[in-house]
Length: 171
Image (cartoon, rainbow, N blue to C red; front, top):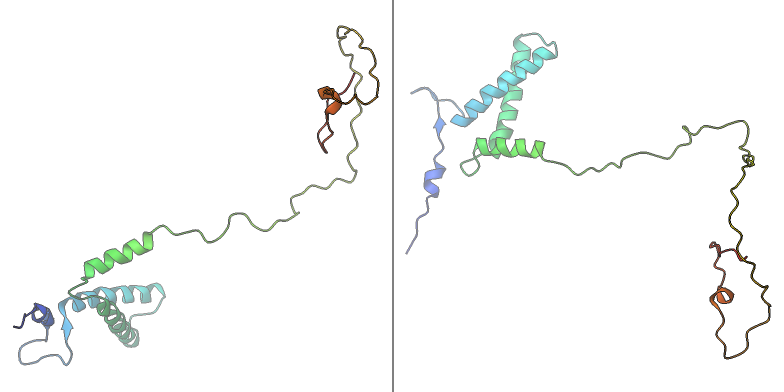
């Protein structure tokens, strides 16, 4: 048993061959005539913006450019992908958000660094009078002898200096 597909319907292009009894030597779909007309007007407008006068050769080149651009456009469209879908796809491709490939900023430069003739000097300490704190009772001086075995040394005597960290001052 053979199953017929509907491909035969789409093989028939909507083609205008020309006036009766005087057909054109080429086949062009209706959509190609519309695209060609729009492209021709755009090409003529671009020629005028480039200060190319309206003459035989400028119009002939406009026709040649129109035929080439129309063939390129019409090779991308068909019954499965109509012109409207191609135009929407093209528009979405142009307006889609893009990933930023260039970094912000730039190369490091010393151009904005201010250079002074004199090097900075430390500020003089101002002689401010500090308010007197109440006197704490004096503690007896500790002996520097190691603690006997079996006794737990106090925290203060066990503290180890760590590089870059100041330990509290001892009275």
